[in-house]
Length: 314
Picture 1: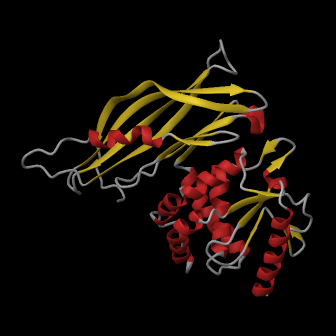
Picture 2: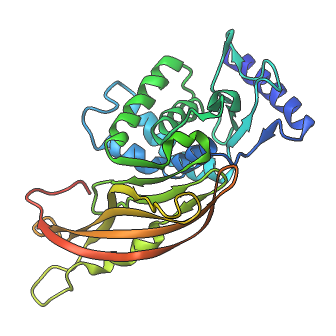
Picture 3: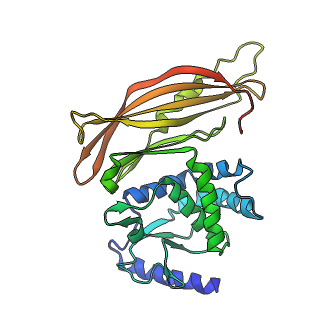
């Protein structure tokens, strides 16, 4: 049955590709960008789940998550994400009589097709970062031989649940539905894995994290008789937008937030440094917001230092 489904999937996919045009595309909308961002950082999302004893407890689930994580470089290099419309190609997303959000094959690197009709409805976006994580775990699980949709959905929900507690997704003008944009940050709570900060627009996604990497050198210097820095990482939290009332739609929007630097000199000496920052985001509104650039309104400013009482996950 599995083999028959895969042959059917390939036949349908080939027919869609043969048509060309807009029926299948790599995507450039808000929902597509959430999925792209989630796929790029899915390894970190899986790590957060595996660090919790309450996540992925059933037999074989942790092994499956590790397989998904280890195959991510190949999945990403093959650009597995694709987007199509069931309305334009009836039957493409129908499995066992039900219209699905996504369909894929059963091998690593198999294209994943998302149904645009379910990602966008009546101008609203029905996909956020947490939902993207859950869906990708489900679809990538099929690439490793898992065919139980219910089990994959539950596993994806568990990974999503762990991550949503560490993710800030703050929309600028959320009532604009899919025409707005968001600041998205993750806090991995680890001395080795950096968190992420990105701006997600309708047509592009901007990774802001590299602008903060220099902070990793702000751990205490290596002194005689002290253990050197073994690991460090930055994490982001407490995002919010400061609205400019004078130029609400087309002026500079300021993203205010905090970044924490985790420093470890070994298990005996670990501490955190907390900073505030403000980023000015230039965006112009037409049919939706277009990204035009960013700058630091306020470079990261040290607020305080906190010694950790117990070791953090490595």
